[in-house]
Image (tube, rainbow, N blue to C red; front, side, top):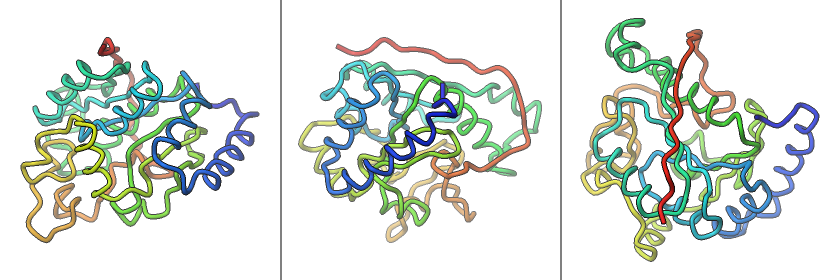
Amino acid sequence: MAVEEQMRGKYAALAADAAAGLETASAQEILGWALETFEDRMCITSSMESAVLIDMAGRLRPGTHIVFLDTGYHFAETLATLEQVQERYPVEIKVVRPRQTVAEQDALFGARLHDRDPDACCNLRKVEPLRRALEPYDAWASGIRRDETLSRQDIGVVDWDDNRGMVKVNPLAAWTQDDVDRYIAEHDVITNPLLAQGYPSIGCAPCTRKVKPGESPRAGRWAGSDKDECGLHLDPPTSTTLNLTGGSFINLPRGQ
């Protein structure tokens, strides 16, 4: 469940205090604070671009819940990375799927909705599934960074997600790509092989292309449009009038 209404003020104040107190802390200290504070009432979301936060969580609190949104449009390499992560790290991976399969969505709204209305597609296959996935928790964390997009440049290491009524933790907010690469090398972290094939930012296959020399790392996402966020990290998320039922959750056994 999301934080009860009477607890919203308490948690919002907690987030503000933590943001100030942890601004200069290490990523491990930020994540450690969150895991100690919220325990099983916190999860981490991962797109399986790399397992940096998963590696940290496995060291700090084995059994941490990791949420992966299986949109139905992922690259094969991303799904293979999910399997490798599940086998290696002592975390509990929760695979969350949209309310409709791709075929069912096509039947309802026409084929290639991602080309005609990418915001609607992201809402159906990412934003709404994440909303359901976060219901049992009071806090969630992700690996977004300030240097990735203009919309992320002001994120705190701890934020209050007012739309969802939850604490949002961004342990890597102050990191650069060099920091990420250094941690991966030092800890032999699993990464998506597409990172080494010209895809520095990996999303759904139909909306992700290789980045050309000199382009922004996220230039390959929704190329040719002004869209640079799927909506998961916007407050409030991008909205849609589509209202559907169904969906599924799958729990994968944790690694040893």
